Amino acid sequence: MAIRMDKPWVELTAEAVKTLPGQLGVYQLADAGGRVIYIGFAGGRSLFGLRSELERALRERPAGAVRFRTEVNQQYTSRYQELLMLHVADHGTLPVANAADPPVRLGRLSPL
Amino acid sequence: MNLDPTEEQRQIVATVRRFVREEIVPLEARLDPDASELPREDFERLTAKVREMGFWGLDIPAEYGGAGVDLVTRTLMAVEMSQHRAGLYVPCYGVFGSAGLAQLYEATEEQKQRYLHPMLRGEKRGFFGLTEPSGGSDPARAIRTRAVKDGSDWIINGSKVFISGADRAHFGLVFARTDAEKGRGGITCFIVDTDMKGFHVRRVVHTLRSSHYATELQFEDLRVPSANILGEVNKGFAIANDRLSRQRIPYAAACIGVAVKAQELAIDYARQRETFGAPLASRQAVQWMIVDNEIDIRTSLLLTLAAAHKADSGQPYRMEAGMAKLVASEAGGRVVDRSMQIHGGYGMTKDLPFERWYREMRIRRVGEGPSEVQRHVIARDLLGAGLR
Image 1 (cartoon, each protein chain N blue to C red):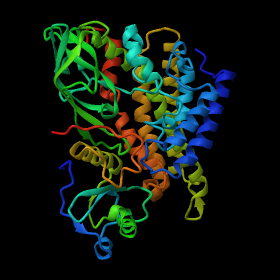
Image 2 (cartoon, rainbow over the protein chains, first blue to last red; image 1 turned 90 degrees about the horizontal axis):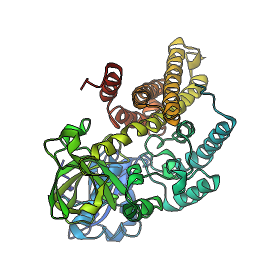
Image 3 (cartoon, chains in turn blue, cyan; image 1 turned 180 degrees about the horizontal axis):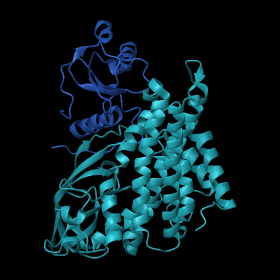
């Protein structure tokens, strides 16, 4: 598994979200230029997993998100933290919409 | 050996039990089922409460401000503290405080000022860097990370894997080979600051424990001053080994705590769930699972308390600690598995804690020395030191 999510972006529309699985996993939201602006996860309390989380993203549009991509993953909490750490390693900051509510403690990665 | 708890121990157990049931379990109802941390405000509130109770710093010696409890009492408390969803690996989410790296109690005064005291105050975090890609069960032979003297410094090159918390740590203990010819007598323990040039956390290692991950580290010409050697050159193996026996006792106790809770849930469910017109509890197949659970729990508890008692009385306890860890981790897995079976489909869901315990309990048979290594340690004690 590639450590960075590299699936193609999908337009954040009701039609696209409706086709998502109800499974647990992680997701990224992006602006029109493909810049990651939010990283989230669908955990054990999500009613319909990734679909529920992306329905919320569709309603709330954090930081004006217009695209998304998902990854079904049972290790969603460690994968979520890994994606945040990778973003900090690559860009020096958290995604803009994560910055207001960062994890309690986030580690540092220096991936090859 | 009298293993009946004293009146004081009974009161401590009752207090901790009430704390877990009234403070921790209700919080978990709103956390993600795989959470391993509390929101900061809850953590601080509960830590303050534990300090008021006088239980903060269970594993910290009293002279450093810890609670200073003996290992038997510590075992009884650990059994209670782990009786919740996250309890196996993060009993009470760490609000009872952590001893951090116990090896630092043997550090020089200067090292204590720089690392131990800030760690005990919660200002610095440390990691323990022993296991390498070449193996973890036989560190004396598996360590390939090398440290070479350069003037008054040492240059470290190599890698470590399955290291918890290195990505969040301010420093760590890194075991490196300083004499290629001497086997276990050629390993030195270095205190490494994670902001030193040449220290890299290369990747997250995902495991069955979704809530927590390990990391893989790489050291590239990492320059460490001689003042950062913990203990003496070529005597690091004893430092690593000392931790291994002692930690096996609370490690076993946490497995027992989860098993006790799983059994409690299984008994409740078996009494109320009906199939074909009768409660599950009336079925012999279910009764036997509950009986086997109880035997597993009591066997584990007796062995673990016996090991703790030996340690408290200053007797050698390596074999007893190994037995406790071996039996409790394997028994805990069986108890959780049977309790899931009794719960049927619900037992598999994230609505209940079993699925997390099931995943995490599997790791317990490998962590802190796999069952096979425990048997090897026990065999060595029974058959003589000549056995390798």
